[in-house]
Amino acid sequence: MIAIDGSESSSYALKWAVENLDHKLKSGVIIFNATSADYTGVFSGSYGSVPLDLVTSLQGDQKDFTVSLLTKAKELCEKHGIDAETVALMGNPKEAICDAVQKFNCQLLIIGSRSRGRIRRTVLGSVSDYCVHHAKCPVLVVKPSV
Image (cartoon, rainbow, N blue to C red):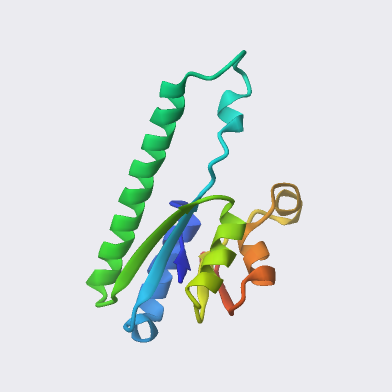
């Protein structure tokens, strides 16, 4: 399973995997995206209730982004002769990725690293670090070349 989120680091991890592990991925791969359903930052400055049409618009934009992201990832896999299935879920990405690994009985999780540094990683948390410690399969963290 390759977890992507649209970031430069996840795009790099996907490209690296299909170029370097294509012989291992020929039997198929799951391209996975987990989107947080937490819009509290968007609404923190508003007084009273947030208009339903704004929430609906944000959700629609997120769905469009996810569909586009997964479509492009699947096309990249197809160019390399890799059969890819796409899966998108809403929820905390850290937990959703680890849950999906278990649900789909994945043999390997490939994930990018944003290389945030120790302090930012501690404060903001790291999806890749969480997955290394909690996924029920080996985890390959792909860091960009310097």
